[in-house]
Length: 255
Length: 322
Ligand SMILES: Nc1ncnc2c1ncn2[C@@H]1O[C@H](COP(=O)(O)OP(=O)(O)O)[C@@H](O)[C@H]1O
Ligand SMILES: [Mg+2]
Image (cartoon, each protein chain N blue to C red):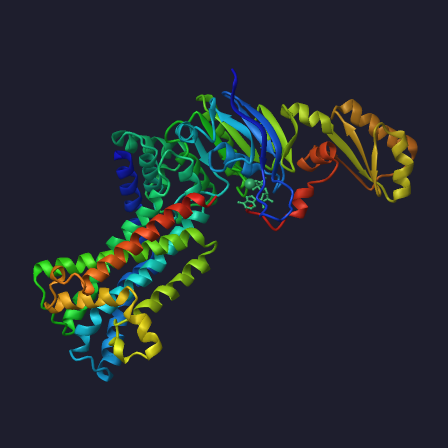
């Protein structure tokens, strides 16, 4: 058990080092989300009527979109470890070799915390006025990490399964699609009807609604078991556990 | 001393269900004597990496049995991993970490006591001539430096058995020499080494015994000297103006073989024998355009022992990294 902890922390330190020294990953984590935020607010913001300042509406969506971009990076890193001989070496050692995956996932969580802080910072400079208590902020961060968690485990699974960096990169297309077909950027009822059904029943929408509500200070998640918050947490936990187990199994099966 | 690695009748096939392709390992047997070096010599695609992966617990054989220090590589995989190290065909170090960071990481993953990690890392960096580059990122290293770091990563725990899969493929002669020195040192300190290579010279320099593998089986096994004596220690090769000259000369020479206008005579390399070959050439009255001494190559060993020249190599040239 103690050696498992040591292995995971060793691999997390490594994951963070690799991410922070990867120019692509840094741009994806720092610059890209800010550019997207600016684009949505300055280019589309004027044309969209969402019943509140668009920046208040869109900030959570940009953060989740950034999580998707970041996850694509995790898929690439895992694929590289699988094909570069690193996993071969780890498997010949008395370590639980899949800790290589948890290292990447933990690094991704830390990376997304940084991205989240940057997006909130820029957004507040641009006029975003959240109305959340310290406890609600904590819940916001927790919700975002739960979301990043499942999407990163999915990325890890993809990284284990694919056989080329190109295929791992293609993953970003899929995860980017999810926030677009949700209430992240426009209210669901403005979507074409065939998309609406999907948007209302996919995990991004309740996560967005929960984060938005917490920031606006008008949702008390625990008091509303059937509401967005409970749904969001269940979605993230179920998907997170499923993809983590699947990634672990796929890792063991791939020889 | 006894055998520290044994393999008996190893079989492995990667064929998908329904597909028929020959097995990659087809009843492979071998033994590594404790404290020595065994070289598994064979062309690309012969099954060397597959053998190493089975012995290092990464792959289950379809049939057969292998042990490392008396432990079964399938049933006791976890305990086997505690006493071996594997330096695979691909260099497995992180380009975006420094040399020291890479080794430190491996030291922790190998579960060395925390407080000994820094000293052991420094010791290995110095021993592998990487002290000056310790705090530089690996993506600034040359191929030889990366390989040395890779090897050092396998030595943090002083393993009892070290598996090296084509450690010098793609290295320049100087780096190759440096790596050979490292392997000799490691063996001197008591580690047994299981090495794969495509180069006869490498097997010759390092290994006490060589196992020649082709088509997933060991086709010959012995000391380097024994193997080479089966091909003839060396040969005199004469290129004549025409095939008819070659045909005229060959019968006058002992055990000569003809290939177009070329005649090849096995020799022990002694002055007396070479002189007698050249005198015979004069006596027959042909004038070679060119002649040279040729030492046996891997292809010669193959030709003699399997009757084909690196068939697997030519058939699978596309799989350089296989
Ligand atoms: N994981 C695998 N899946 C399918 N085929 C494989 C796999 N590993 C090796 N092979 C095939 O097995 C043969 C022997 O490979 P290998 O053991 O790598 O040979 P060597 O190391 O001697 O070059 C090759 O034809 C290779 O394509
Ligand atoms: Mg190989």
